[in-house]
Image (tube, rainbow, N blue to C red; front, side):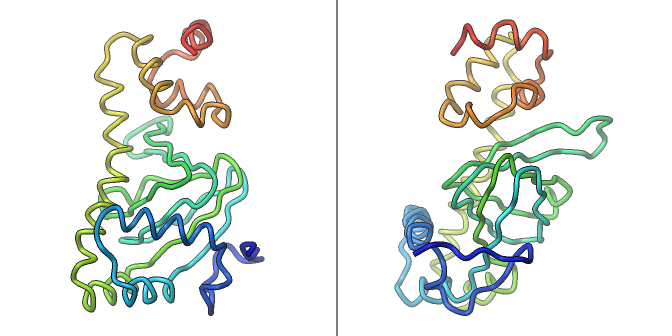
Length: 204
């Protein structure tokens, strides 16, 4: 079943059957990889799900403590605090999560191409945690998934040699390279753009 398109930026669905079935299956499998989910809990999760679609270069309005799942597309995350020029700190592709906390709420999210997201807001999460305590371990897994993406960039920046940074990035993100602008990759790994262009192709 096809996903519904919306005239507004986001909408809550009255019936989870209106979601794309493959997206729901993907989300369920991903969550279950972090811990067992009873059918009652899954049904409750479905009743709270929200959906939105971002066009290329459109931003997503982060809500504190929300859990966001990328069902299709690609997001880049920018850090702006204490910086003259925004720095890309994360690329989040299909099948991965975005968590918003007080610490990262100022980082903004922008779609690289048309991107579909499904998410749970804070009120829904509180309701779920009260009734289903086992979901705490699932939440911890979701958080770890997001933090792994942030941690990878720190690993890249620890490399002093620019070519090593580029190689690490290619090995990690090879599947999404065709969707990325070279200037965004250079920004992410903190490598001079002209130097990046000279050697990037040689390392593919």
